[in-house]
Image 1 (cartoon, rainbow over the protein chains, first blue to last red):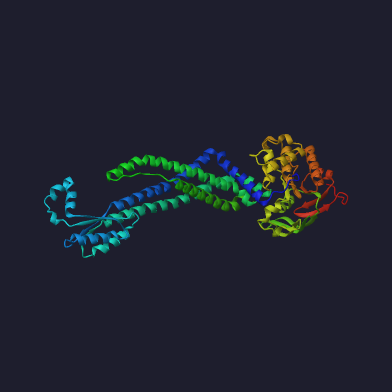
Image 2 (image 1 turned 120 degrees about the vertical axis):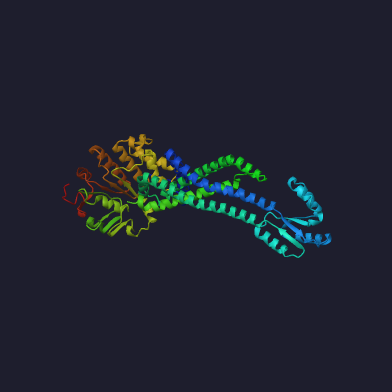
Length: 313
Length: 228
């Protein structure tokens, strides 16, 4: 019979209960290693697919920014403007919020540039310098949206000092749509796989509860609260989440290692330098946090639904 | 104190396990609950453990009306009771020591304190050397002692025992009864459901006799001519 030991405080009870449940929850998956490995593997695949799409989107979004900023806006100045008036117009454009850099190219400079292109040079020789308009090349800031660029273009197209503004709007819109599609795919697949995780983990925990039905009944009969009974299962769910999250990150690293050469060579074909990268440390922690939260929630929901069915007489 | 006031328990419409039962048990009493199979002995214990709901009537334990206990209060209430089962209900994946210590650990005691007290309980019951064995490595009588140790290690007010000698030979049964008597002398109220009339007679304690869910007799050895 318990000797005259001081009765533990509520806080002591709580902390000790969690420590014990943590150890039990950690050991639970190792009791049936093969079954647990399959569960972790399935969960890891569920995490991996949205994670891969998300990482791809992060890289693609970065690439899109560089593409968007590579494409400059060409403002063709009206013939009637002399150099002084052109200089004032150039300054006006430079003062615009969206403009990062604006440079004036005279007709001679344009012709020189075109002459550098082997294929175009033979035709350019036929064009007299006077036929070419002066051109202001505009580069926008990196963060500028396509809508802001469009507003800038519309504003200068109606300016009487300007002949024409060249800007490939369709290309940017297509790029934007492609990026959004990729993001949506990542979101939808994440949602679908969260549901799959709920089902898989729910099934795993329901089996664990069935296997330990007598133990759980006994624990309740000797005075354990429902919170105490379910605690080790919640920890088990959390540990499965950590293992699955780490495995998914490993899958991702392997995929990107394999994918890197392919993507770099593809980008080089389009004349771009692509530095394909995985996740940062903070993003890795985010992934682990999400996998823990998802598996913990799945475990909790299953335990709540299983309680009445499995534990009570 | 335990009091049953016109308690009935039905399973379905026609199956009445208990019919209008009333009795009271004083603190520190030791008594037997007897009757044929299906008389309602186990039902009384299950109602006291809140393993089943009362169909009609009231049960009070230490002033608490069991009908009024909220789900959150049930674990706290159960911690005042030690339950011993005929089939022992020991956890096979835990050692004898761990099985007993579990009772204390869920009450928040540290591992060290729980194990120390569990070991002391085993020594008290004469199976101290079995601490690190698993239940399936013990005989039925030893397993029942472990069940008793688990029930009393947390110093409950009441011990309920459901056919604790059901699988034991007469000598072992008598030994277990002596253990119960020792616990009773420490102030624990003990209610034993048993159909072992020979044992009940030898123990010379109060007996509640059930028949078809009704309380047929409530006698103390010196008061009744009841001969089991």
